[in-house]
Length: 617
Image (cartoon, rainbow, N blue to C red):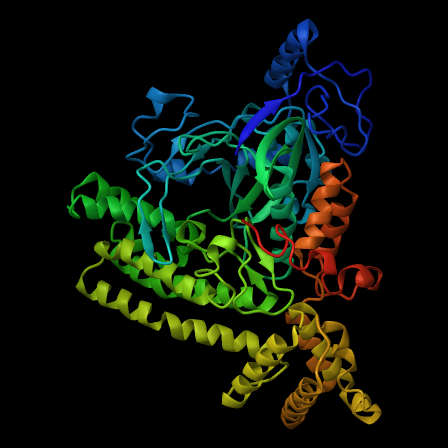
């Protein structure tokens, strides 16, 4: 159940305090008790005073001088999606394009965000801001707040649009009737910076679009804070991912959501996420299906739009596949792209396994063609090891931790199926060859991360057997994924002392959700002996082995119960815990002894099977 409501704004007697939460307009307590953010007072707009204030704001916007970083950012605007692709031919007839409707042609619809009311900046990634050339002062400015809250007039050189796509689930096409796409995500600019980086900025929760399918177009603080913390954590875990630049929350706008069997109003929020592109397998599928339905006619609009988006994909994600003499020839660069794309998608899946990440809903519309993680919806990080676990109740038979490689293969198959019609006979043979090779690419990527996590210097059948036996023991013992791998590094470093004291298992005692039987204790001791024997045979220094293991097995990951504590505190107006977690996740491989007792631990008993934490619907 969804819906949006707004509180009646009332004048506020005091100005915002320096260094506190800032708002564009008047403070109005949200109806669910979301009374304050960081204790800041704010100005408001209502009645006659509001009319005058809005007029002043409009005049200010005409005369405004942007902070240096924001000015430079929009001076580097490079809207390749709009420049190189085709618009919806009906968009002018349906302005402002905020109502659901069929979109049967074109790659985008120009639509402006619906600004978030009474917004307040509550989190900003300094690392991502630095990538964009933005200083702390830039991010604390009123102009930045306006922009990431959906006021496009604050950055007049930036353009905004949403895109259509479709999807397949487990490789099976889902009919979406030309109404599927960015339902609440609106891109608000692309920039090409002097460092050679190209970034697209997108606001999630920015209001309705033609693809909203009757929804309200908003995101809420619970899901938005989860995405902000998780995507930044994944970046610092060195897993390819979309990023988050900012999180803004409304003081007065809330949305009705179904959560844990109850309908509740939650504060509305917008995250500004950033990536090289947001090109999905679902984009290729939409235009591939349209070309197929038109009979693949060489001169048809549908085939031309498919060619356009494939060319755009290569330029945005695989520019090295183009050569100067191939401006009009798509065959060669498309063929050169196939293997790198397969490798990226295979590598991403292996990286998820490395850190214990379950995407939960890995269908083709949530699979980026550039090989990055996106759509932090019903995700989770493995705690008690169960390879059949899925963080989304509807995905258990398709997107479990064990099945993510299979889902990756199915998504890659959908991509190949969508673009094969653009290839000649030799090209189609090559595409099928790469598709057949995908399982081997997955196996190679998984072998590399397994070798690294075990501290081995090379991989062979014996190493594979060691890893398989370990995973079997972890499942039988109810072992925590993150704790076990991290504690193995301690054993690799101190194994001489542990052997002498007869306490080889001691570092692992904190890792189990159940008591070990005598048989399991013996099995663990036997496995540890075989593994340590292999390490000794390889002859690497114990400290170096342990250090290598700690560089691939993080100490801290964003477990759902940690995120729950953060968003519940945020809903009460406190972002201290969210800021603490953001700091922690910026260096997840470090020891952080000050956080160890709170976060390097088993999940608390009361949350281990709790809906909304262990699994989500």
